[in-house]
Amino acid sequence: EMQRTAIPASIKMAQAILESSFGKSELAQNSNNHFGIKCSSGWDGKTYYVIDDEVDENFQKKQSCFRSYGNPEESFIAHSDFLTDPKKEKRYGFLFSFGSTDYRSWAYGLRQAGYASNPNYGDLLIKVIEDYSLHTLDVSTTVANPPTTTPSAQPKERTIQMLNDVKMVLAFE
Image 1 (cartoon, rainbow, N blue to C red):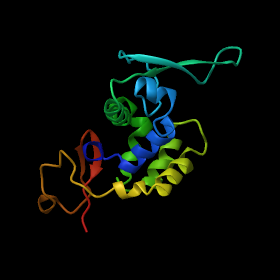
Image 2 (spheres, rainbow, N blue to C red):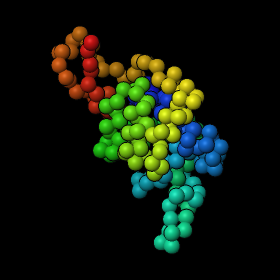
Image 3 (spheres, rainbow, N blue to C red):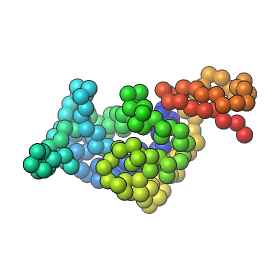
Image 4 (cartoon, rainbow, N blue to C red):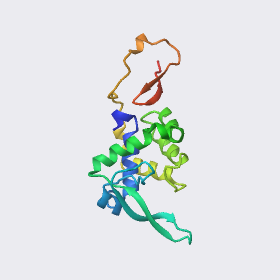
């Protein structure tokens, strides 16, 4: 997924660990949802209801609708698609200006974008990444759909391109 979308692998793994309690949460076990992605108005797939942080008019916790997937791999792909969805560009788009190995900026950026309600979410992600050396997953790799031009053919100025529906700037030494 890092190759396909430029989302750091360390971030994806840390989020999956935190959101699913190492794959042991009710949501992960019963719906293969490892990222806590809730149903949205456009979601027409399978659903799973679990008590979460939402409250009713009497401030009692209530069941929330979460997406349900056929297997964990679908959950990981859906997480990437969720963050790269053009409709969510204003919310998450700025994350893609960080390098795919800059897990610290991604961690704090996800909190800033409101991915999770915990004010310590960025610090929690970083702790998981560093405790389990997940940053070693963020190796520089070739992106699946590289730009069609080579760096030598590019002018030596800021050129914004689209790569996997993400705006990028090709930089030179």
